[in-house]
Length: 128
Image (cartoon, rainbow, N blue to C red; front, side):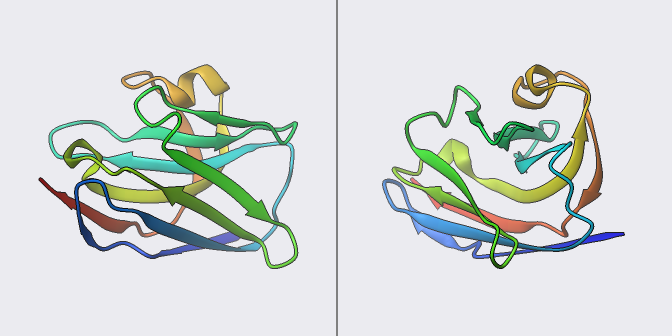
């Protein structure tokens, strides 16, 4: 069993920065994808930043160059540094693990994917 808990969501002005944290407890296997996802109003949940099974970092096109995912294995924390935030980044951000079936599906908006374990989500609001 795996438990994930996000924190750090807030309301910020456009151009601002936020750091989201996700504490992961339980069976954390490196054989699965894990990362950050978001659900913006009116759209399906989609991947934002994914840590793949080789430890490589992968980003959705909309956030590349602005967001950075990192993992601290000492305390099992997954962090998302978000810079130059835009109103389009507004949504609920989730961390998840045991995801699949492929990196391409996780990172491409509108493509189906599954994650076995999800956090409860944290709201990010970016004001224009």
